[in-house]
Length: 240
Length: 102
Image (cartoon, rainbow over all chains, first blue to last red; front, side, top):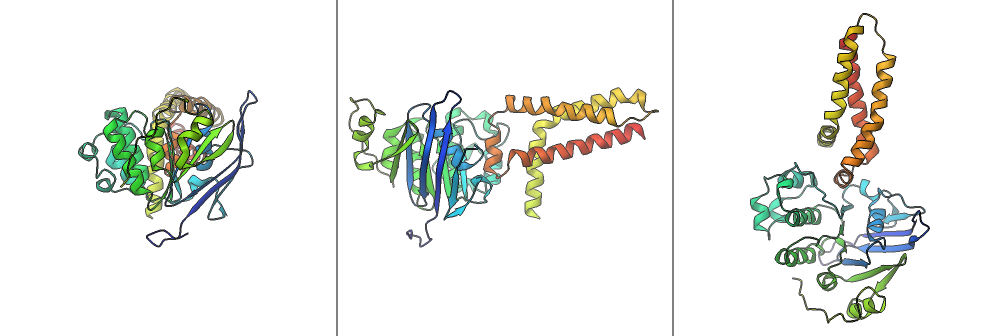
């Protein structure tokens, strides 16, 4: 597959991902996941269904039995040790609280003017330590820095958590822009914002990763028990 | 060269999260060893210093459980960071022993 900017698409695949909890419950059961540049992939699932474990297994530090992670067919494990391949936003705060946004951007090789172009407050406060920012603002900054970092893939675990509505829309739009040059995997419970962004969608349930059709996502998610049966139709949201 | 500088900066930054405790141990042991400087004994202090790494690793993991993701995003593994910091700290400890027992 060739993208619009004529660069060949990069493919990150993970398969054989299995994880059993100490209580015997199968969290991941031989999961296969494929990410390509130029697409946003959504990952949904109930609390405790193993979404974070899956992301961490792909990223690398989380040791998972029999896991195989490949970049363009080449075995890369742990993936995070491969320069320029993948970065990961965990559910918890990422940046050291005493580090400034500007310093964090330098470490990640990101120009702040580009990353914070839509976010005047972040541009104005880039010299402040991250610990002084509100939780939602810091979360936005972390997601933006990783999205704009020079990697082929970005894995975002609940990037919308705690972010105010206006910034949510901007952050979602930014994901839509960035995906033109990289592959983005987003796991978040804010499915109303997430679904319109995704070209591919998966539901992780009972340890199995089920593909969900983006066209009929709400119906399928209700059928699989992720959404309540009374769920209203999805609001239209356009990504630039 | 740039990579080496980046690595040194990263290790230095990581060492800052460990140094208050590890250097305090080093200085405390220097104080305790001063009365015995006429009869140098390297084995016991070295063993004690090595043993302090176990609670240090445990406390670091307990107090900063999520800090590792930042370092992983920069491409560093825990083994790589802790290995370098351990070598650096033990080097400083060795220098301290040399100063006390010279």
